[in-house]
Length: 72
Image (cartoon, rainbow, N blue to C red):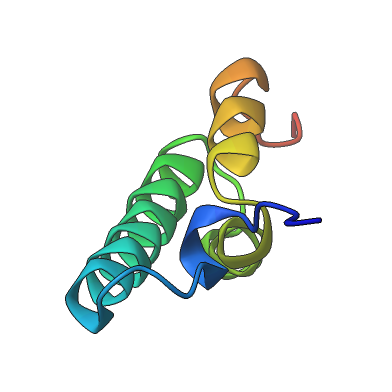
């Protein structure tokens, strides 16, 4: 019985295809970092979250409201 393996770990893809996947994933994480900073959130923490969760982190950043600075 053959069980299909998700794309990035599939053995029938070329090294170039896998490299493109990881470059795209890394680019998405950098974009998410900038998007998080524009909402006054930690760019570093969201960059790390994006490395692990990718598009799900993007969705969370878009849904979450901008952080307001505390009133003085």
